[in-house]
Length: 89
Picture 1: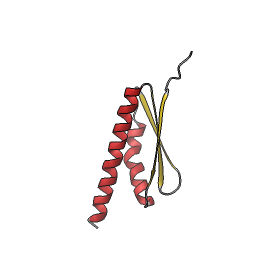
Picture 2: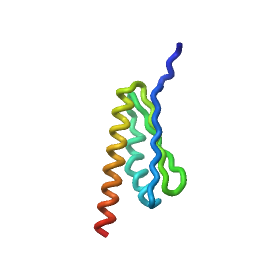
Picture 3: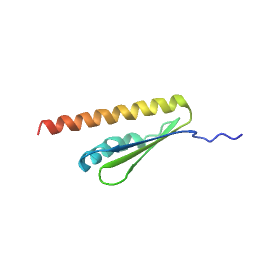
Picture 4: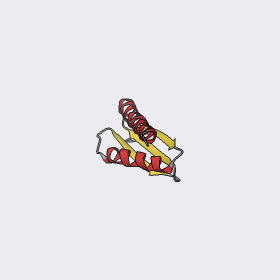
């Protein structure tokens, strides 16, 4: 049996209330998704004004776990930063 080169896949869909926040998230995550990582690959796509889709493929479960933890951490940090910025307005 031939194994696919990137057998592990995950999709995360982020829906936010404000399209501007979706834009900020995309701007924050785009440089990281464009980085060349040996065992994982991420792709960002906007669908609609306030929705961002993140697709991750990985060569193994360890790479998938690391990629998901990393991206979810960045998403959490970005949303917390946006929320703090709104409170200071």
